[in-house]
Length: 157
Image (cartoon, rainbow, N blue to C red):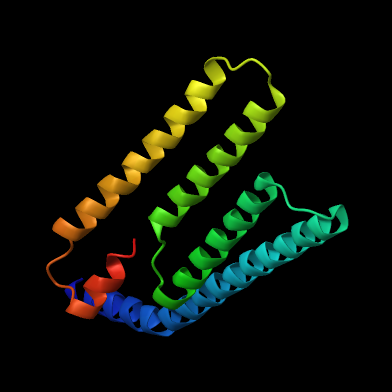
């Protein structure tokens, strides 16, 4: 009975040695395909927004903030492509920019400011504080096994 267990374990080890590289390849292929799709959709949307601004003859502050959102998403895709790490701060920057854009539109269209302005401003403040916490934690509590160049790139998170 002991020999059967050893044979089963050896068979499982050999099978894993054959299957793991295929799984890794498929996972990486999906990863790159997704990044290219997100990057392409971001560029497409930014170009479409820019063309709409050009046809309008001017760019409003909302339009410019929308372009900043596309820029941040594009930067996030680029960093993720190069480092394989999701820059969480960029997600927060996108949220801050989106809330600011919404706040500007809200204030311009609503003649009487109400509690909605405070909610949007509070949400922006919470996201800004989250960026502060992430930067502080990354700088002071980074993983000890990182080399100096990796630590510098990790600080970008």
